[in-house]
Length: 76
Image (tube, rainbow, N blue to C red; front, side):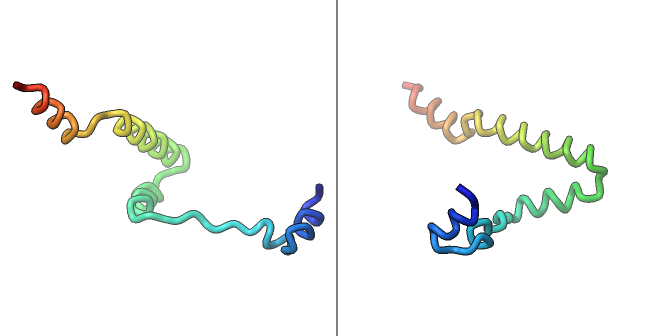
């Protein structure tokens, strides 16, 4: 099926079919971009990879509050 046929079947234009909302920006993302924009592209990618690694690390870690609750529950 072509884009033209799909657009016709959905009763929209090809432009509407291909239109995409821009990604939402966040305050944190804007801050990180502002911090790294003066770096060369290779260092920007390095920082982005490090941020991704930190996020994955922290997502796998129990929060301090959860750990404290677990300790208080297990103490008699």
